[in-house]
Image 1 (cartoon, rainbow, N blue to C red):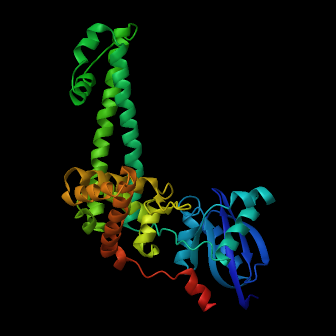
Image 2 (image 1 turned 45 degrees about the horizontal axis):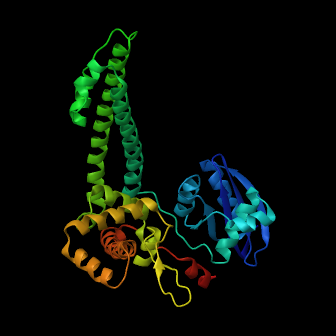
Image 3 (image 1 turned 60 degrees about the horizontal axis):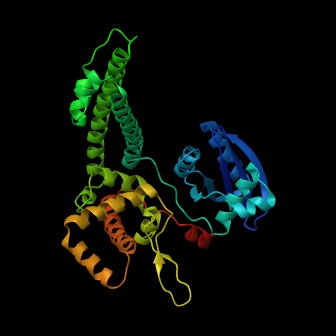
Length: 361
């Protein structure tokens, strides 16, 4: 029978086929270690096993955006506080070695010590749909670029009579003309080149149609999830989708615009030393979200007078172009965060923080 006075903290090292779980008491003593399959029955067994030691508090889970996504959703639906845990410290891992139980124990200790406090993305609403469509769109864009590059390569090395018909044309015109080519004789370089170009061109056109369809669905989803975000000058559907995917379906997990800026890698990092007082670029965070903020800033620098005046003022103060863009990204991050919170904060319930859990304990 479980001891209801004992507060239990769990840690999970996630894998594709199984998860390893460790239970700790409030003093950090290991209560048990067990392995569970990555199925619904396995998740239920894991929760029942942890609850068998006492009152279950928080559970630290590695990889809540990949192999641990299913477990994180199950535990959250069951009313358990799930804390997102980063991979163990490499220096500590070198000292004691690498094993699944050790990683699970490290996850539990990170939660118990208050080092891990991040709330995982809910992945249960419109933003998760946006993320999935972006995965498909990104791979389609990459494949289309590859097909276009191969069309150029084939034309550059094709027999002159074929090359002369296609060289100098615009990309869309060249692709359309190549897609209409036919060849029944592939024994000659000319016939093989025609068939290769037709195959690559039709692939490019098919991928273009696929990307257009995905863009249409993304526009509808982004408009329904965060219309205020699209009202910000310089923000389009693609950049809005990227920023929403970084935020997740539960934006209240980000406690302030400073948290959002850190998530996007646009928060200032102190690089002062001696008499030199400065901040450097943040090379962490979600790099796709960081790129989205960067594109918004570059867009504004081409037409927004306020941004141009800011650049002139900070340049006169001795700031470099990189430092000025970093500052502008921080301002844009604040504006984006406020827009997302206006649109989505009422869609999710407030999240209990780890500090509140520790105070209650």
